[in-house]
Structures are given as C-alpha cells and as structure tokens.
Image (cartoon, rainbow, N blue to C red):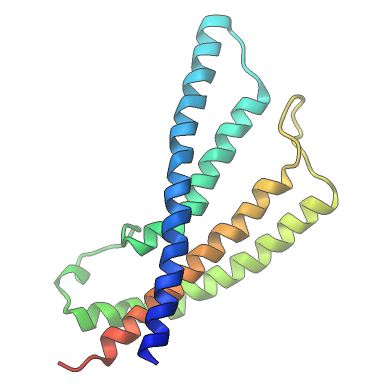
Length: 170
C-alpha cells in the first residue's frame, strides 16, 4: 500500500513540477510583452487590444498552471501562527483535514463549473468583445479547469503524504 502511495505521489509531483517550471517561463514572456506594450504607448502613443488581452491571458496561465506547483513546494498562502510550532504528525493532521474538507471539495466544484463555463464558450465560438482582440476566448477558459485539476491532483498527493506521516510509528 505504501509503495503504491509513493508511486502516485511521485507521478503527481513530477507532472506539477514540469507544468510549474514551464509556466514560470510565461512570466518572462509576460515581462517582455508588457515592456513592449509600454514602449509602444510611450514612443508611438499606440496600443492594441490583443496585446492587453494577451497580457491578462499570460498572467492567468501563470497563476492557474502554477497553483499545483506552489502547493507542492508548500508556498501557498496560509496563516502559520500555530502551524509552525506543530509536530510533524500534527501538521500532517491539519493538512489532511484541510485537504479533505476544503481543498478537494472546492477543487471538484470549480473543475465541474468551469468545465461547463468553458464548454459554453466553445459552443458559441466566443472571442474577444473588443475590436482587434484575441479570438477563441474559450481556450483561456479551459485553462481554469486544467489548472484547478492540477491543484486537485497535488492536493491528493499532499493527502497521501499526510496519511503516510500519520501511519508512521513514533
């Protein structure tokens, strides 16, 4: 049983590590794009809707695709007032309960709802409402269930790690 859990954890963390590292490169692309947009505005008093929309889309991808990676590296936002002083088993219990009662239900709900949201966008061929904006807005909407699904997977890996810690003998 423990070997199977270790294998599941390994593969989930490998996926989130690779996706997170790839998403981190989008940050560099975003910085270049923003600098280009600012330079165009200052030098030529010009900007295009597609550039601004692409900036928002890249930011969304960094956030969504990096969520599982962030959880894997324990860099998510949390109030550590008491947690930092807990023993390993107490931390594992907090992580287990938080994952079961908060992370997993919300991730499942968001994946289901956002999949419908993106599907409706695809069905109507939704594009940008702005002239000169990006077409195929449904593509970025499908990043929502994908990113939250990766977060859910990492949550399952964290749940498995907590179970392994709690099963250890003193």
